[in-house]
Length: 128
Image 1 (cartoon, rainbow, N blue to C red):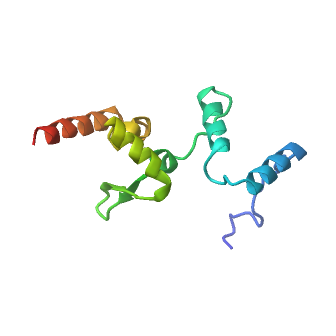
Image 2 (image 1 turned 180 degrees about the vertical axis):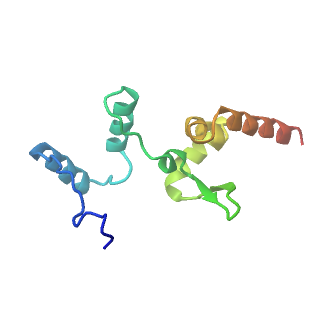
């Protein structure tokens, strides 16, 4: 061990009460573990300013996955997963491309200028 490193791992004590335990038990016993009404409740709490927690950008962008190439550039991949079928179908029926449904997440991660470039690409491709 390096002489300047502490001989222990610093640890902050958590506060978990009976209500927290019940909420975890309820979530684990439900059909919804990583999606569903509890996730919506977290997002609503964030939007209302009742929590500083915001879902990670990787979740916010889903089903778009960001990959980093060896040269440092980024690529965007579309992950097709059956759980997203309803959203894809609705978007197709309403004529709303996926990038528009993910506008908030795309702007959050890449900025308004990037989103505007996507819109310009869509318009260019529509002319083809």
